[in-house]
Image (cartoon, rainbow, N blue to C red; front, top):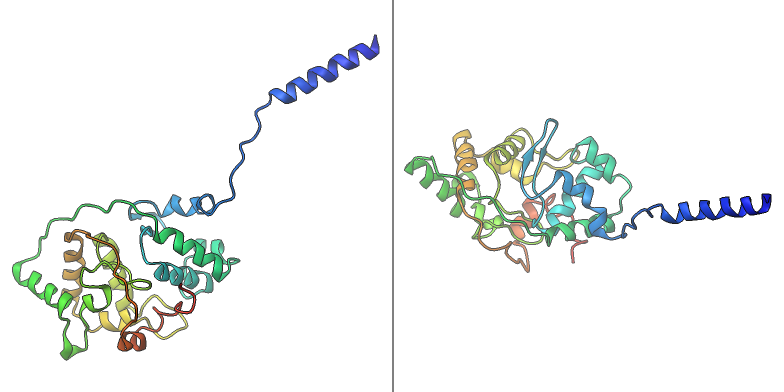
Length: 239
């Protein structure tokens, strides 16, 4: 009898184990591994209580790679990013950068242009011609004629909200976002502009529709290479 009871209990136990739902298998793919990134960096820019979370999808791989390395190595500082990236190799950061560079989300609709005709004309002059007298290059010289960026290192100026652009210009004018290196070239350029020009640019750029992708650049102009070495610091890694 005891033996029969033992067999019954053993059978019931096995049946119970068999009926328990098996934990789902999670595939070990890059798409699965970067899901935590998308929690903060989704399909549009957003402001959090502690930080600003820009959309990173569709930005050039070289640009994203440099940003990731700068957070990991302390050239840019945000503690959560530093902790997340501290043990990641350059090769792995490059994988992540390429993944997000090919990820496409719709861009927000352009905002209404509230600038005066004179302010608009002044901005468009800076965009397309710059100001040689002040050694300010045209925005389009680096970011492409369509302002959608130049692969692999220069990001688009379009599809960005006013708050983000204003914060970026503010950071550049206060010494740049790089630490322990030669200041970023945008810091040098932004400080040659007036505050009125900076404000107008940050207002005008969100009014432009995003058309097309980043331009291909087979060879960067020598003056850009010389002037913006921090931006091009990942040149040996990008394929």
